[in-house]
Amino acid sequence: MTDEIYLYNTETRKKEKFIPQVEGVVQFYSCGQTVYEDVHVGNAKTYVVWDVLVKTLRYFGYHVNHVQNFTDVGHLTDDADEGEDKIQKKAKALKMDPMELVDIKIREYHHNMDKIEVGRPNIAPRATGHINEMIDLVRLLIEKKHAYELDGSVYYDISSFEDYGKMARLDLDNLEAGARIEVNTGKKNPGDFALWIKAPKEHIMKYTSPWSIGYPGWHLECSVMSNKYLGDTLDIHAGGIDHIPVHHTNEIAQSEGATDKKFANYWVHSAFITVNGKKMSKSKNNFVTLEELIKEVGRGAARFTLTQAHYRTQADFSLEQARNFRKRYYRIIKSYHLALQYLHTLEGEIKDEDRNYSEKILMNFNKAMADDLNTPQAIIQINTIAKRLDQYRKKGDNFQLIKALEVLRTMMTVLGIPLIELKDDEIDNVNNMISLRIKLKANGDFDASDKIRDHLSSLNYILQDISAEETQWYKE
RNA sequence: GCACUGUUGGCAGAGUAGCUAUGCAGCGGCCUGCAAAGCCGUGGACAGGGGUGCAACUCCCCUACAGUGCUCCA
Image: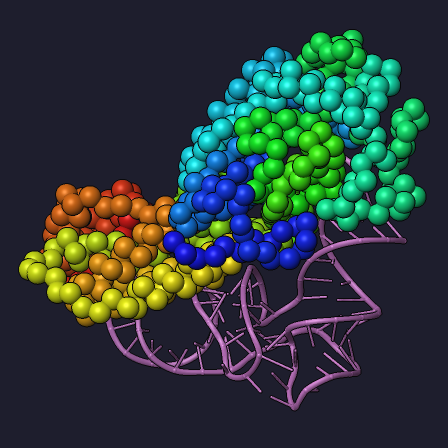
């Protein structure tokens, strides 16, 4: 495909034409979950965004190598130097081994993502599987004078890295004068962050290193795993917008400090979901879990809900809105199902005619997706096609209808919004029941006809009477 | 305090230098055993103030407000 893809690059704060290092191949790393709690809607939205990015790149013909990590060690409840390991803390509360908790949460994560059509990454490495490589990186950074040991711990010396904070546009002088609280007086600079942390006695998740028995700093894993599986320079590095000032800033310092090469050519960041205008977050306890959303509106509408806003827009979330999006989703499904039913009962040849219209819609869709993943614009094209489906069906314009169906399927697949399929015998069965019901209605036996409607409804078939003789249905 | 981002109709949410979407909700009508839907029609927005332009909601500057980050969070 020849479409040029444009992505908003956080580093330049501009939309840029996407050019990978090797033509046709994309080395893509996204920061994954720290696995200790349920996936909430805000987390899920971010993973949906990366999934849409991957699907779009593949749709446009790229071979994408996607690596997304699981953080299972080193992510602390406080800043990089103080506080307890999040996983260890939660595991202690549940009276289980930290790694048991991690395994449970990783399984849950995959299960949840499968439900909303988020494809698995090519590689999903765990931090604990890369302790040796992390130690190697720390050693290299010490050799290159980017890091120093302090009482068994190792810190990155941010003054040794000229461009520290450049992508985030940090004003280091003001950070020091501002809200940052200095806790460790031994550090060279208040902003120096831990690469290796000496473990207190009661700490469970600890590993042997040249400096102490301890554990790695949180930022280290992404530098190590992206390098191991994707190379020195990534084409795209993605993460939540909150990662810009600290996590990604530190990753850049580590990776570029070690390789002296550019760490990532494109930085893509996903904006937050808010609740009543405030960030949805674990600490604010204002979150809705993905499971709750799916329970409320179903998995297809859940995916639709998480896809409908542009990824860089801070969208407000509520279950009420999600119910709204549910309606929109099933409006599309209904058009799809009516078209399937119509074609199912069709006899005779389908004549070849002009198919420009659907192709034009598809071009609009391609253009929208190539323009920094403009999903709202793309969804408009889906609505348009759904409407066209109804029109072609009513007109009996079968060729156009089939073409439009193809286009709809393509667009839904790229966005990862699932269609609900109907089997042939399923269509026949429901139609038979409906024929019976229409007869009962004609005889004025509304009790019996309502019973059939209720029965079908319990099987997720939604009936809508168009007239005394005609009933439309679709499946939820 | 400093930095970044944003401010579009009742709500959600795109977009373009000159005509603006789309969806839900609303209003009027048709249809209707009930339920639900459908169809036709319709009103409704570009935070405020400057500037550049033949023309700005769209570009630039300032102000106000909001969100996020600087402290764990996608």
